[in-house]
Length: 88
Image (cartoon, rainbow, N blue to C red; front, side, top):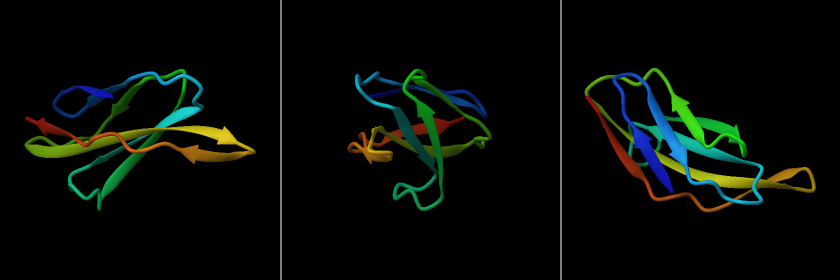
């Protein structure tokens, strides 16, 4: 689950903590289909992600997923529902 704190050029994304995961992957894009995206990966201790350099008067879309490490490789969970940010 995602919750958002909007600012002019920075958004803080707070993730719902999931037990037994190694970290989270968050995608931010101006496209609904995530064609031009920024991907941020954080470890499991950090549930707050800060995305910088967002432009004013743009709409951004955000989704996230958890991952855990199995035999040295990352196994990803399902993507969350897409959340829309209207950056003013």
